[in-house]
Image (cartoon, one colour):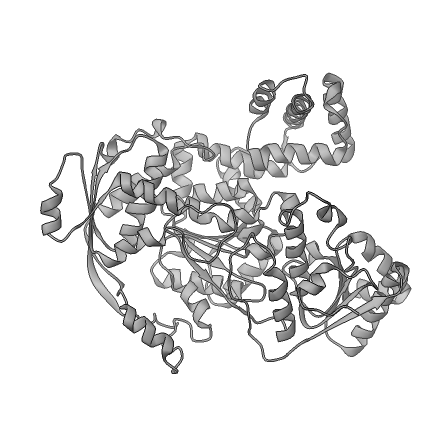
Length: 629
């Protein structure tokens, strides 16, 4: 096992003193304390808060405030008020937590002591409990025990400049020699909240595995580490990688698997688990509409999505949904629709109770409600996991993010790996803002970008970089090629839409004869069906044998092939026509489509073929610098 890098460090005395009586600021300054006023910090923090999800850099917006703790070993904060959850968020996120990580002696002079913070007075939405107050009290208790700690030495500006100008390159010893400097920096990050921005092909799973190894090296027991991600297949891959790396005993769970385990151990499972059939959903929708005929039409798919929305985005019960709907004007279309959906939700839950079953959404929602409402259960599960790691963070829904935030507290040793440029599941309630604005929940987080694409040929990496830079809702970050091979991009303009599928099928057969893995990708499943039909029996046999894959771009996420044939890259088809209508704007749907196109490009390791109708080439081709014929 590789040892830690020999980064220059300094020894500090870490200790917290919390007072409720006044002190003399002049005496503190004479003793070389940095003296700060809570009110002024609050104003500075408000001024630094970014607006929206467009970020000019990867930097933490709170960095100017956090820098004080690295420069000053002794910090006093005076006139602290603890009147509201907002006060506690500021106190924890921008004072106590960063000072603790920097190894400061911290003096807090507040209007009340930590033990006087009544949890009932600090319950905050959407957490449903005194999330910040509990984390603050925990960290204050740890911080109050003095300790000598080593922290990174502050590098003088002249030395930073000299290092940048040096032609000697990066000579810092690496924690893991086979990883690049950016990957090593993420692995070696501090013990608090760490966000790793991991573009396509940047080795994110390797970084996650090595981070687990590093946590074990720091002394964390295997059973105190939780790795979580969106789906079961990803969990199987991570578990296999950990086992192969010689790191056994780590808990690896999907979010649903984690909820299932929690509910099962706490005796909250019902007799059966599963989703309802379309026929049942139609019956429930018809029953709800019979009571609220002005609520509009509701098919099985819309009914199922509405109930999932209540559980996984709004995170409310049927009674709460009914109360919200009741506050709206029943004569308005919105009020009538809200009453219909709330009634549907109630009927759905009544059906589940009669059938003695839970649906899959309940594995998340019921687990969250249990953690929120039962402090003993919450403390038990929080104590179980000291370190929490999350892969594919850009894919998670509001409820899953809440579940992880509850379980990671109060230690807040949270390692999130994701890429806002690959957030393509908006229809499943994923949101690019959840990645970009993580520093609003955790102001002291450390953010590390991985910058090299080791999957794709250089030309493919450069094209994907040119494309995604047109999005505004993202971090501005470098995207570099990590391989020497150029790769190859070819465009194939077809005379009319009717021949696009057939040409793509012929390309697929040709690609398989040349060797290597091949996939045909499209924006929609309909076009894949046309490709399969055009290819006939030979193509069907190859797909059946697993040597050729046909997939939507959504379904290709997390996959890679030697050769990718992207079919249907027509304007109005990819991007979809609805995202181009007047009033749609430059963001929203069009940026979602651009992220999806970026994912499509970066599935190809060596060769990328793009098939479209002549004269109708997607605007994304031009944005990527790919010449359309």
